[in-house]
Image 1 (cartoon, rainbow, N blue to C red):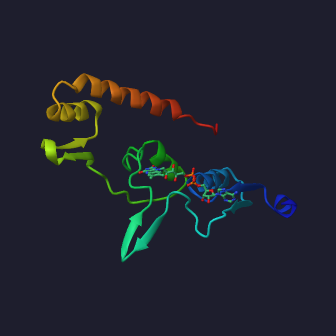
Image 2: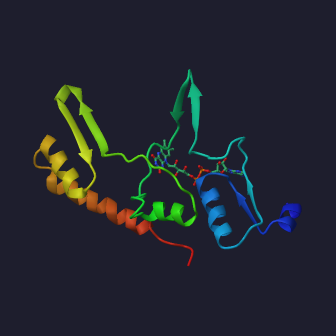
Image 3: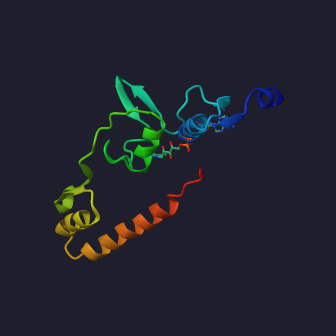
Length: 151
Ligand SMILES: Cc1cc2nc3c(=O)[nH]c(=O)nc-3n(C[C@H](O)[C@H](O)[C@H](O)COP(=O)(O)OP(=O)(O)OC[C@H]3O[C@@H](n4cnc5c(N)ncnc54)[C@H](O)[C@@H]3O)c2cc1C
């Protein structure tokens, strides 16, 4: 470890999303001598995939939030923009589709709290207020995590 400490300004343990994002941010602040140590044979950590019988399977990531549009990026989109990472994101017009064959429920949910609550209410009447309350609670939890460590 002494060798590494003598040769690098920063050592990051783990070459996945957090480690690579930290390295990008440090680099943007002028720190160039960064070593990322990864114990696996591939970078990416949980955000990985595998191929079986010609099908590529996502192990975890299937969707990313807080991207926004090119013109109006949200937090994650802004991070990529600041870091000079240009990705052509594929927008997902529907958030979820719930299919319960035995009850005849087949409802597609779109983004927007009120719209989503209305769509759930159309399948399960009387749930609008509760769903909206849940969505607002989710928003408060999300906002509470939305803190910035780097001034
Ligand atoms: C089933 C599932 C579905 C998910 N779906 C989504 C989704 O749709 N959208 C989304 O945004 N997020 C999703 N996530 C969450 C997302 O995948 C993770 O939050 C993210 O990949 C975590 O990144 P990380 O860098 O923090 O940690 P990790 O990916 O866990 O990376 C840690 C890295 O550190 C390495 N490491 C650990 N110890 C050492 C050591 N001693 N020396 C060297 N290297 C070490 C590991 O090998 C690994 O590469 C999902 C997660 C799961 C499990």
